[in-house]
Length: 91
Image (tube, rainbow, N blue to C red; front, top):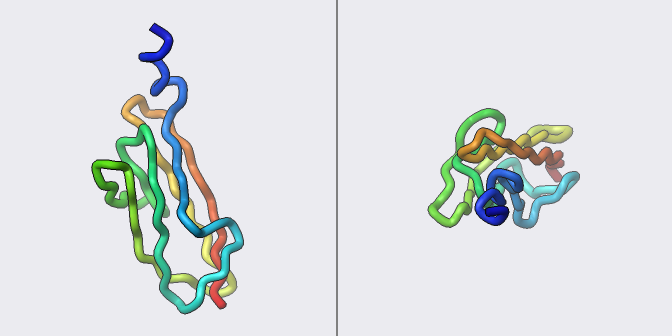
């Protein structure tokens, strides 16, 4: 019985590839990629972004000086959410 409740207890998760908080990007455009688990949707700056059947996402972005704040929020089918916030600095 306990294992079937795991998704409800665990909630969604977000993994970001490459970028970390405070990352420097070259140029004005860059891409954020990552993966969500146990999530029905993910938003970036409150706008939905596409996820493939495996939970992978890829979104092109523009950075602004002195830095850009990215807020990702994943929501599962039970309404539980998790978020990641990153600051990205242009070179």
